[in-house]
Length: 147
Image 1 (tube, rainbow, N blue to C red):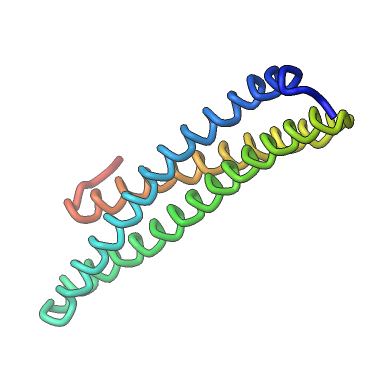
Image 2 (cartoon, one colour):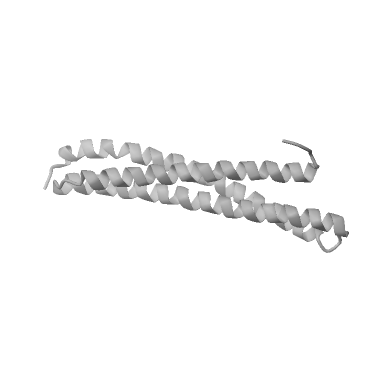
């Protein structure tokens, strides 16, 4: 068993993943707000469907399809960001117990870090794709030609 003074370097090492979790939390806040706005917009458009004429109805349905796709994209981004935060949390636990029990788990620490980063990168890529879908929906709504 190690003394408390020997654990201080481990706790200092765990600060990095803790800061990462904090940053991911802010990303999750942004993403959940975006999901809420997407859902609100879809509900608003859906409420307009019953009174819409045929051409307006087709446009509304096309926008609703885009919003459905966007909601699924944001959900995937949220899931990936959450998995990244979970991997960082497991990384902190592994770092702590590695030092506490004096065991060698470099492969596990490295794997958790890589998983954390891959999930975060994937989440951001999906989120960027959602932003592009939002612009496509705006283009459709404003009836803008070209790119």
